[in-house]
Length: 88
Image (cartoon, rainbow, N blue to C red; front, side):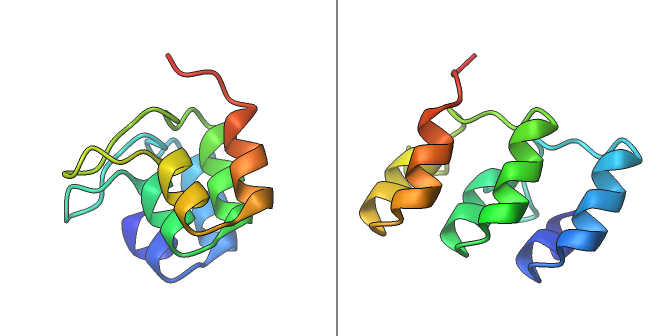
């Protein structure tokens, strides 16, 4: 799943999530997959991860959330999508 997120391969991400892959998982670098998708500007993948249970309040090693990264990157659509989610 991590490789598919990094490669922005929405079709493979969808297949893996449908097969039960953990949307809240972290990649090999320890960064949550949602943060990887937001950092890459992959709105469709971020949305799929959220639908499958990715935690919007998960943080990277520097304490940043996906919301913080979307705001810093001035990605209004991504930010709006993330803000609609409720942290656990």
